[in-house]
Length: 308
Ligand SMILES: CCCCCCCCCCCCC[C@H](O)CC(=O)SCCNC(=O)CCNC(=O)[C@H](O)C(C)(C)COP(=O)(O)OP(=O)(O)OC[C@H]1O[C@@H](n2cnc3c(N)ncnc32)[C@H](O)[C@@H]1OP(=O)(O)O
Ligand SMILES: NC(=O)c1ccc[n+]([C@@H]2O[C@H](COP(=O)([O-])OP(=O)(O)OC[C@H]3O[C@@H](n4cnc5c(N)ncnc54)[C@H](O)[C@@H]3O)[C@@H](O)[C@H]2O)c1
Image (tube, rainbow, N blue to C red; front, side, top):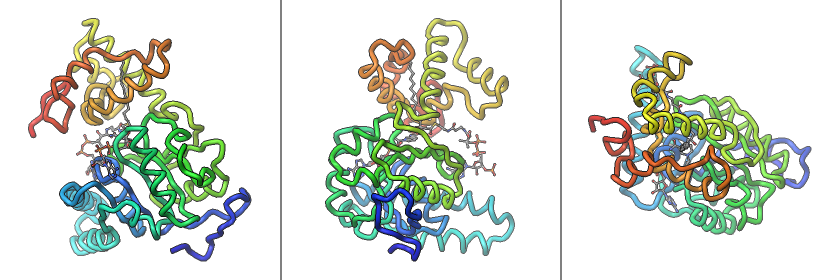
């Protein structure tokens, strides 16, 4: 359902931004769960979609735990207010395994499924046929081109990137990405929604890695190469970056936190696309850890060991 400021002339960039009330988040993993959580916490009606009910119920549990942490911080000693915040927020969150049915009332669809171009393209083609005309589509991709993801969708003026950061309930930044066809009304709606989500927005063209990951990838790469040459240990590199620059995590801790499979997927894609760029060369230590199933915090071991 659209609010009274809603307008339907998407070809006119001067029109007022659409107020986004109903949000569908496709993918309920690390990122989709976080996006759905924050959207529900900030008063949006949210449908969260994944491939089966088992995955969705685990995601619902994680969201509920995280919401309690947020509520504790927000309301301190007032248990009553904290409980109300959690139950009101959860009442706005529903789940579904049917992605096409889930977009019937959506003002905005945020896709946060696996980082695979073919699967993302296929999904958006189906959604394009099912969603109302006014619905805005966005991808939370870390590394893929938004233009390529949008390839099979007709609504290119209502397509963009909304790149959140992990953990979504904590990280304040939202990158808003435009492709050449994205209308100004769509950008305005996405910026307004980002603000309503409590995030600080920055804008960027559809360039590899947008702002943050374009800078983060060479940084990781240098750290991995320093370790592989034996110049310093992972622990000392992490300590140096935390205490020397004030970063909350060093590059190896952050890699384990994000997931080494995700890191490998990103860098292999870029190495293939930009074979002459030495900054995008795949790291052998990363490749080895992933081949051994050591994916970081989620599997109990990556560059470091974790208690599961
Ligand atoms: C050559 C080869 C190179 C190959 C490299 C390829 C690289 C590819 C890179 C791409 C990867 C994709 C990246 C993605 O697209 C973009 C990103 O997301 S980048 C990652 C961004 N995130 C960060 O940088 C996180 C940095 N870390 C932190 O900010 C903190 O460490 C932390 C995670 C917030 C945890 O903080 P801690 O203090 O350690 O732990 P606490 O548990 O005390 O938490 C602090 C504070 O936060 C609250 N909190 C934490 N987690 C949650 C949660 N899930 N839900 C709710 N609240 C949470 C917690 O309650 C605490 O609050 P407080 O009590 O302090 O008020
Ligand atoms: N992990 C990060 O730190 C991070 C940060 C920013 C952006 N991203 C991007 O966000 C996206 C999701 O990453 P993630 O870390 O949450 O992954 P994840 O593996 O934790 O979650 C992906 C979820 O999508 C579901 N899924 C897969 N195909 C689906 C489909 N067709 N329909 C519905 N659900 C489907 C999976 O079952 C899984 O639950 C990726 O594009 C990733 O690049 C990741």
